[in-house]
Amino acid sequence: MMHRFSEAYFKRWFAKTRRKPLVLRGARQVGKSTLVRRFALKNHLPLHEINLERHMGMDDTFKTLDMDQIIRELEGVIGANVRKGGVLFLDEIQATPHALQSLRYFYEERPNLPVIAAGSLLEFTLSDHPFSMPVGRIEYHHLGPMSFKEFLHALDPELERHISAHTLDKDIPGSVHEKLKIRQREYLFTGGMPEAVLAYKETGSLTEVSEVHRSISETYQDDFSKYARHRELALMQRVFTSIPRMLGKKVKYSNIAREQRSKETKAVIELLTKARVCHAVCHSHCSGVPLYADINEKSYKLLFMDVGLANHICGNDWITIQSFVESELVNEGAMAEQFVGQHLIHMRNEAPRLCYWLREGKTANAEVDYVLSRGNLILPIEVKAGKSGSLKYLQQFALQKNATLTARFDLNMPSIQDVRHTTITPNGRAVAAFRLLSLPLYMVEELPRLVDRLRQRGDAGVGERT
Image (cartoon, rainbow, N blue to C red; front, side):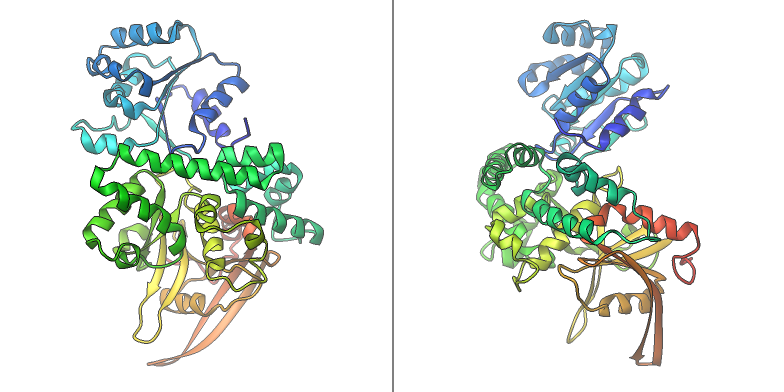
């Protein structure tokens, strides 16, 4: 079992005096169950685990909302007294929907019993049942694939410490920078699905990793029957394999299935989004915070759940990925954008959401890959696969939205610099002046920390937007 940074979150949750049942959400096979088991093992806590997919008949028991009866039935199945200590773990809770409703009464009537629930398809369960989640009486934790730093922690912990300790006041040693670029390339191939990372750690075999990807991909497609009608299955499989091939592009339904009605393709994408197989990145006008209050839901890109699986579906083998920097492959930049987006979308403990900015013109479009907010600071982000690239779109965004700080991910060393650009507008000359935070791709997880450091010392530009 490999270390996950969410273990620290679990420890804080367990130590709370008014601890609520914890609902762990995320796609299948991102390591939810393993994380709970590792937490219990490391903290010497008895784990009372029940997989509710194997005991779906218990839904009638949960429906009673009688806590004495519920606990008696659980103890009968588990074969242990759950009231004597330890953690009660209700895995695959979506299989018995009324267990979700009963979490309220675990909180109100059994507050001393630590309860963790995990499920992969909770959105489907909630949409099919009239009851609402017990708001205010449960706590959510969202889990995605292993991040690049978690990958490093498993394979090369010393390199991970270089990233976590970095400040913009001193350079990263050149030798370390080169090693991190190599490891980031390995992550592009391996991705963050825990089984794939473990296979690479234990065997060092890229062939073994490919076999894991094939197995996971097939398992996901087998799962489609759980949340799709028969006539949707073929379309769902087509969408599943199409998403990795259109990363970084505005979604056009006709490019996925020309013979299908747009309404049907859209519905399938929404199903896969609910299952967290993919994530919609919506265009925001970025006129203020919160960014998501200003979106155009009809204009969006899609991220796949994991860059390693995306490369597998696209047929990109290790030789292809090694050549990304030197080649001019169409999906070179798209995989870098997927890598960064995959990390940005899981940075905060909330339902995955991410925005981008698009200005559509008569002759050419302007697009900024991602836009985040930190406090009242709006931060546009560009992603480059190599060492060079234009700042044209960041300059246009800064000019139109008065952005004082921008960010770019590429393969260069970390840096912070002042940019001043003059452009001709219909109203005459205009100047865009902003700070550019440039970070190597492998430092994507440090973006919030470094941006907040700049904000704290008043170095985030000419002044945060108000």
